[in-house]
Length: 200
Image 1 (tube, rainbow, N blue to C red):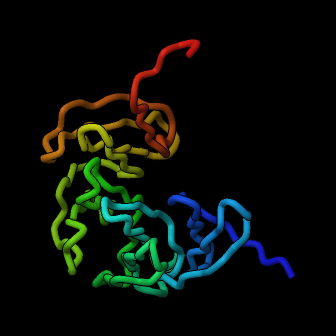
Image 2 (image 1 turned 90 degrees about the vertical axis):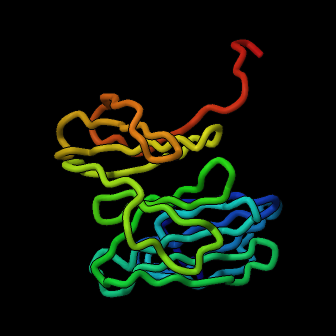
């Protein structure tokens, strides 16, 4: 019997890969990269949609509670050495739908989008943040990316999902540096690290 799952995100950690079972799911599947076999599953909140790994090797999973908002959203911390859950943090309102979990360049702070703002918390916190770290007015926040080299914060504005969007660049203290035009629905942000030499 083969059971099919959809996934919004996969993260590799040493010889294991963690795949989030998204649409209606509530599990993180642990895959042995060498054998390509599922070796375990970890139950988290409903519809895990993004993940990040901090400086301690802890896997953080952000579950949005499902598109019907019938479950509370949850942030779950998992020890990648043992695959055991270290902590579960439930969001206070069942209407909360956090997205786009990221970690800064030092692996010390987590960021995610919630209710039109950028939330920030330390990996050592035992409570979710109550107030946004960045709260830009009049923006349809869609995705967030953190530059691993300097922890600058980039957020995208999807506008009306038909017009060209924008990308806003902030320093690590939340001060806006620049605004750049993107194309329609800017949906992901990638950063090139190291030195690239053509032909090498």
